[in-house]
Structure formats: structure tokens, C-alpha cells
Image 1 (cartoon, rainbow, N blue to C red):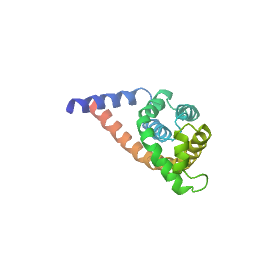
Image 2: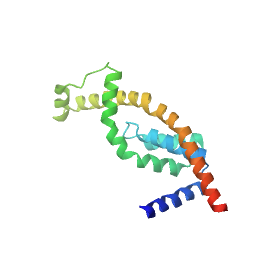
Image 3: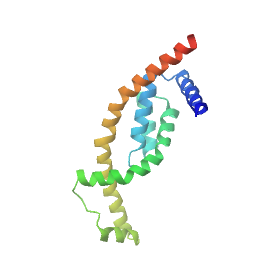
Image 4: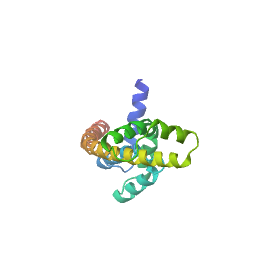
Length: 157
């Protein structure tokens, strides 16, 4: 366990020494994670690339965080869909008959079902993930800044 902690510490120090300031690193982590859990299974890579270019963040770091969040994105897809159904009750309901038709090859029902579920899930994501990222950013920035000072102090001693 101690060996793993030392490896993580070395990796963390290396990331901070490769040009990412604590502010940029915390922004990269927050934006990459928030975009990475977006219930849009085909668009997060493109969205992260746009965000990184617009905010002048390290593309590789943002994409790495995005890809690390992929299992979480899959795990949160259904909860976002369910929350979206609660928050946005309009549109077609996902009934057993519609689901049965989609499972038995009704392409129209499948596309319709997936489109509405994705729209509702995106709405739920908009209500939850960006505000959470805004709350986590200053906390993470503070933690990274204090850790950077400790690492710099240890190297100077």
C-alpha cells in the first residue's frame, strides 16, 4: 500500500511539473469528469476536445479524465434517465409495450425510445453534474494547491 501511495505521489508531482498549474489541473479534472459522465454515449470525446480548446486546457489530460469516467458514464446512464423521467414528465412514457416493441425489432420504437430517454437524461445531467463540478472545483483547487506547496517544501528542504 505504501508503495502505491509513493507511485501516486510521484505521478502527481510529475503532472504538476509538466506545465499544469493547480488551477488548470483542478479545472481539467472537474470539466473532464462532468463531461465524461454525460449520458450521451457518442459525444463526450468531441465535447471534451471543444472545452479543452476553448479554455486552453491540456487536451490529453482532459481526454484521459473523460476516458477514465467512461465506466461511470455507463453506470449513471440509467439513473440519469430515471431522474429525467421524474424531472421532465412530458413526452412518451417508457411503457412495457413500447419496450417490448423495441426489443422485438421495432426500429421506430427503438429510436423514439432512445431519443426521449437521452433527452431526459441530458436534462437530468444539466441539473446535477455542472453544478456539482462548480462546487467541487474550488475544493479540489485548494487541495491541489496545498499539496503542491507541500511537495515544493519537501524538495527545498
